[in-house]
Length: 317
Image 1: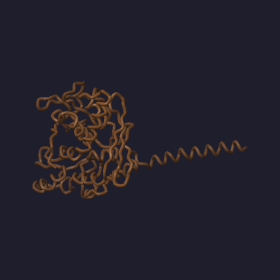
Image 2: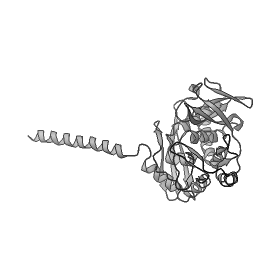
Image 3: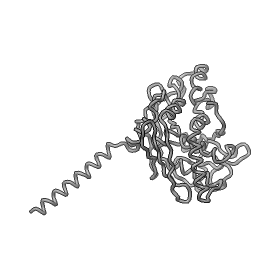
Image 4: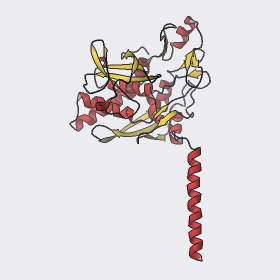
């Protein structure tokens, strides 16, 4: 009798645990942990920009790697173990300061009186007053040249320059790791930088809050702290890291379309693998997907349409 009672008790407890796990799973955030939210909010606590990091990102996908961190007073210590080359995993570690990150984050964004959301998937100009747009839109990393064609959007060179200290630290870590293992080469520098950004979880940021908008972009500091970002965030980070590893003349950002949807990738010249190439200013650039882990040797062919290159150059901060 006691054995039957024990069996029933174990069965009841097992069912309860399974049901509890299912219930917790259905209520839990599908992507962003409370720990990551605490880290990004700690690092941006002094920002003059209003941001809501607690919105669930669209299309979240993880690839087995994540950035981890711990808070110590005004600092955050981040660790990101990622595949360098040849399945060799290495831990990148960095200390970020809340005052410094808050200052950087405060320099990017746009007032929704200039550029705002029409619906869940579309942004656009909120006024046709050109002088107002030139004065107010161009202050913090957005640009306005004219109404048509494609005369407004994010100044990606400005975004890259904002994050140049972090990008430099990542690039130097990659260079040192490759050199110490006798694997430093042009291709491996590209491959390692690509791995760094590709294996960060994917998710479309929506940090807009009240009258501040960010056009679905996460700065590199934010991407690491919150442990996800999307195509243009990853491509800007990739280009920013690369320009400390190879000539910036060999790098372009590429605005394009896939299956009717806007997209951003990175083009790199001086590599010769199967894939789709784009000729620009006398060079052939391999078009590289940054959002999901696709090896440098296996980049897609004939996938990208309506290609618009953006050269990498020093921006005025």
